[in-house]
Length: 315
Image 1 (cartoon, rainbow, N blue to C red):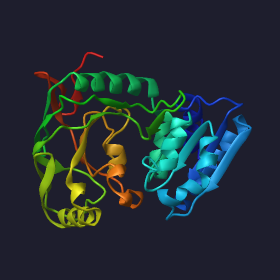
Image 2: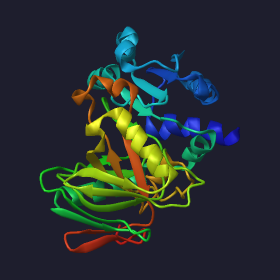
Image 3: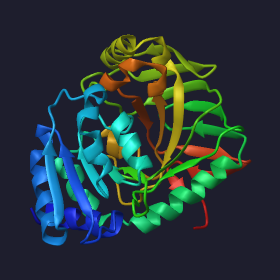
């Protein structure tokens, strides 16, 4: 319980930098009611205008507009949901209105407890540093001990840093935080998956995603591959697009088996399969799939910035 309280206090002080005269909403699905209670308890001690709202577990963005005005009136929102509200229209509108938003999708008690020790300023620095390098680079070359080997052209896009700091109007971050990412122009090679939400722990076969021209053209392996293929089939053909490449920048995390944590571990990499919500009205019922590989070697502009999971930058 002590760690849960410490995390709640850290999010308010170090992440949101919430002020006593501001308003905050704890938005949650029922599986996360215990965490919501800890957050609400700590918020109520410091902030007069503290609200807690449970939403139905099958509450998607199409009917989220019922409370959109309420969301837009908040100074800050902490969302404990599965799936994430990241792409919901009401969340986007609230952000545009200046609301600061933290999303903790599918968060576990153990993952939440670890957040209390997060050095958000250090993560901010590393994430911005690497995202800036991505912005000025032309190609990312990737390898991992598991057999991953990818080449990703990135000339026309800018890097993005997810830092966990949500202290300015209209800012947003997922937690756990810590990644530098970019949208690939295309992508070719093989991505061998160490962890993803569709991974079967009992599967002895490697899960391998074969990528050509920015699409997952073949997915091989045992039970895990079957589960991933079935998930993508439900989402439609566009779900096989590679829409993001990311590098973990969080030094305080270790591989836990939770893909939402593992993708943020310093030196791990991930690619994201899916599409953006404007491309399909079904986005309110699905969300992109993150595939994680451990201890990467990342080469940019002819230099290794990460070597087998170890940071090579002088920072």
